[in-house]
View 1 (tube, rainbow, N blue to C red):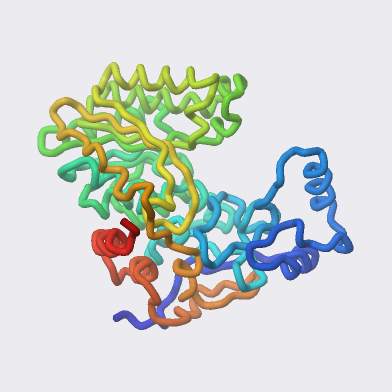
View 2 (cartoon, rainbow, N blue to C red; view 1 turned 120 degrees about the vertical axis):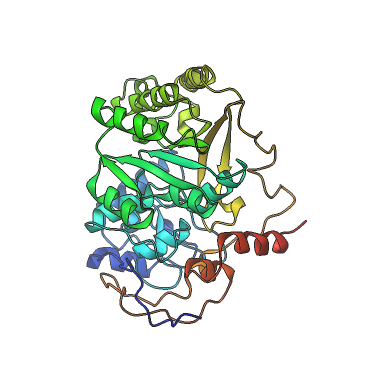
Length: 391
């Protein structure tokens, strides 16, 4: 077993103001803004209370402290702020560290994130959980090679690599995201947007050369911020939503053996579903057998409640998609992984402390921690989880 004195990249917890620290200390495990005394002055809290009194929702995750015995809520890009979700450590008076957030996303500790603190937060919060990507990849039959568009920090690619797939190339416009991808996934990363003709054509040419020797898939999660106003017509005009058509154009040109498109569930509801139907029709013109599903991370042994829309298409020359390939467990019961199981072996921190050099608090206490520390392969972890699930 590895020594637990080794470095832990990105184990940094954001600094808190004196006011934030006052509020954090007043919130019990599983509590939220309602537990903060009105004697603590805060304009933010006044706004939340007024909104609640107007009946505009419970805001139950605001200033939320995690429960150790449950999966976390969705990790977003603002987990460094106590008031923007349920990001407070279950027992320590601070927000989650970047490494803890990465673990709740199922990134192993060897996956180091590069760049300023704000960029790292975005890389972690915007990512596809690698374990979720792994399950999708395993449902696609024999491993092949992939080109990864809008590759981000490599969550989708890492899951495919775990399943035996190999990268051809990737594209990413953000230089810090690109550096993280290159240092963890490998392969060539084209630093630019596929909206550019040169970048687009280069990736087409490079990917097409691989089609004679192996199955080639196009992966991608077009930037999803434009889909956050789900169901509202103004979302259609958002320029960020147009990148999905560039992805579709890439699939049309390359004619791969298949594709995987992932995004937020809001994509399904824009313009009462008409936008998504248009996307489906466009992809069905190129590849038959297009299907989609909404996958919940906690049902795939990931310690986080997070929903993603995943669409898969397979050409006629490819193996059929397993009908149960994405649903390795069913509604009769799932062995949920909790926050405590995910992060309890990491060393304690104070607000603003960088614990990257502190070493692990203890040996791995469970299979998830062993996976995060490279002591279990994803396939071994899956086998153990399936055996532990209620049937």
